Image (cartoon, rainbow, N blue to C red; front, side, top):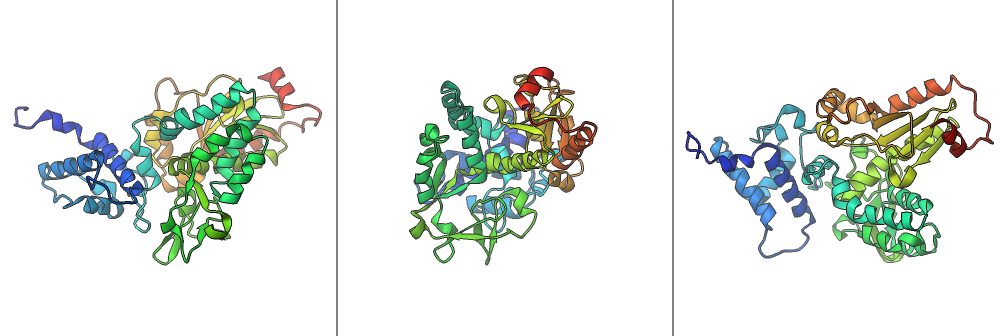
Length: 388
């Protein structure tokens, strides 16, 4: 007890620590499809208990049940929760759960794992790391590149398509990994017996309140979904989708990576994707021989992004390093760069420049126009060897 009779141990369950517990609880609740015993696992019950305790200590009416805590997440902005969070840690849209689909938003998933990069902690070290190790041992970088493109371009596969991947020579090495990351689509996401996919990202759309909702932040900002394709699971041999963290942290930013790749290729630049088994995302060789290394991130919370940023690996070599985020993140939150810089570790300060994808493309164009086009006979590898 402190001088005021308050148990100091309980102060741990406030602010960021409690938010992480709550985010983890909400994510686990979203994965629960059948009744269990006990009704809620320890993480969910702990989150609820300590939220109630904190509310009572601060004179705020607490949620009356776990379902009401989940309702708070969809209806109450974080700034209205009695968590004592600094304003800059409150995500832009404010909510943890989508009010229509009742599924955790990306910002909720970013808080779940107490590590710099959620996908690295939960998946890359276990599955993506295994894929890299397999491809490295086999001397097959093309297999890893094909695997990465599959996760980006095809977050949803029919059973027939999944079976046909066994015939792809670049992917056969990772057949077991592929079967681990694709899971049967939830029956609740069907409408009239059919699934629908987003015309922008290819992910499954979630039926909600008479309309479809895409779960990726980049698509949620625009209510249209392009050309919606429907899939009949009976005729397709089933429908499978990537696990949700991979959709959020591989497919989402991966689309920004491949969009940037296409734009730079249109400038007749040499672009290498995920070089040296994903040391970073893009290696761009400019006409004058300078090499730029790029990591692409699509994160809702700039503070968490800043904390998790580290200098890019030096191999393969490059002259300048950049961290690129989709422009919509900065349009949504003007202070994004300032907050990011305020949370950047000392070892990364001055090593990376944060730009939007639009700013980076303009920067590359401005540099490219200073040089004549390189003869097609000069390969990226040759030029990198001369200038890196």
